Amino acid sequence: MTTRYEAAYRTPGYYWGKLPSKTCFKVLELMPPGRPLRLLDIGCGEGRNAVFFAWNGYHVSAFDLSKTGVDKTRALAGEAGVEIDVFQADLVGYRLDEPYDILYASGVLQYIPPELREEVLGNYQAFTAPNGLNVLNVFVHKPFIPRAPDGEDTAHAWVSGELFTHYRDWKLELCSEEIMDCTSGGVPHQHAIDRMIARKVA
Image 1 (tube, rainbow, N blue to C red):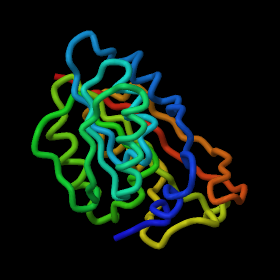
Image 2 (image 1 turned 120 degrees about the vertical axis):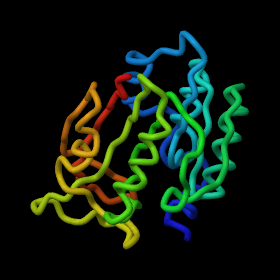
Image 3 (image 1 turned 120 degrees about the horizontal axis):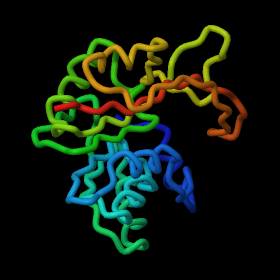
Image 4 (image 1 turned 45 degrees about the vertical axis):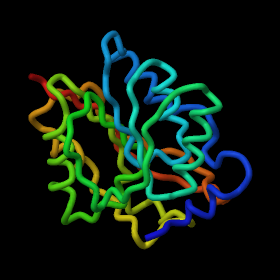
């Protein structure tokens, strides 16, 4: 399966830029790498967040569906002088089989069909180390926000608050919903997004 991002990533430069998401700084605040910490960037795109985490001392693995995204992540890591274990995988079928201290997924979980969400998130939770973090955001449906002009048929919006219910037994370090402006695809539009940082309290 391919997405429109494969073509977007083949263009010169970096589609999402090279600066990390602001959520990365919150992770650094909540769980700084004072000891070796393993972090997995799920759907890493072109690597901007993965490289930030590696540069700050985390042991980073990362994967994306896009081969070009994986290649550009490697290139960006080389440019920054950091090491990242990056590989190509489809998050719909990929399951963790080893523990991580931090799981990070931004702008990608909409590709998980509703019937698989409990299984996938259960897998993520099972392979999160004690006291570890799941740092996730999801696009949520709002009837007053039109479908994004670059929306894909393989994307499935979440229900407002749905993500948080999967983490009702975890400590929510951050839990918010916002409407954000976006210009991806070259057309101004909006998204409603739920953001969460949840801690697996031992």
